[in-house]
Length: 304
Image (cartoon, rainbow, N blue to C red; front, side, top):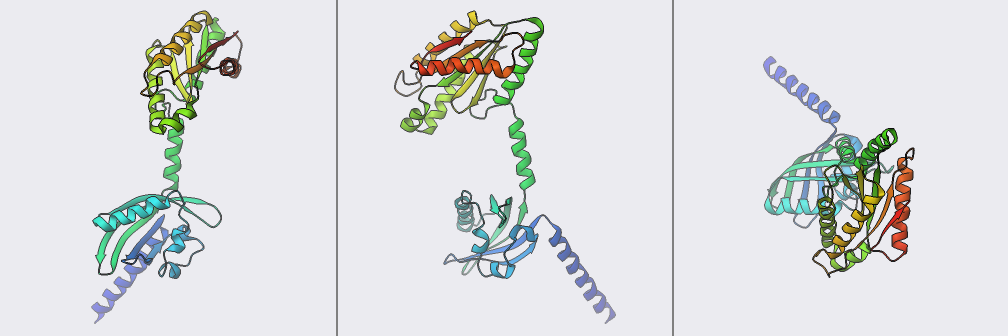
């Protein structure tokens, strides 16, 4: 008899320890049930109350929509598709989504669960984890990355860093430095007419044309959208201007897979002045770009 009592106490102690552990994990252990008629509920939930603030667990045991109504509208279709796919194929559920709280705070949630077929539907046994910090860190790394994802060119951050370095050298040694700002003409029209996939292809091919036309020490960057920049160290305006004109012509003559001659660029060019800041150099090149656009596009305009 004493041994039975000891076993019971040990079991109760283990259950209490399990309860404390589940209450402290950064997420929730759950059972999620979807009936054949589409009714959804959470028969079991244990863990962080923060994920379902403002909703009583007894309500979720009867109707999961009290939680699903919090899912970000952009993520909701993907979440429902993942549930449907897991139920149909009886494969593990693995998805991520944003969960909005009553105060507007947003948590990124990763859900992992194993389905179990039941006579009247599917029951998932799983875990939801708050991965907000991980998502924020990944976004920070992407922000710090030097490479434009679409074109493989340098991004704005890398261009600005390199410009600072080259301007510092130019100021110390009075060496020439030129900058081109390039903008695709009527790019919205290209996207609207041929679609965004074709628009992305145009951007990628344009990046290749720019890279092929330049030296190893030059830097081609995508500033964002249809805007590009080319930094040319040890290059005066007198050499940069004809290079920009040759680049403009090669782009206009290139077959991008759409109507010939429909892809053109406007280019603004400026040479760094000793003592001039990065922003002033960019502003002067931008004035040349604006003038090229104003005068009819498909032009190169330099600013002294």
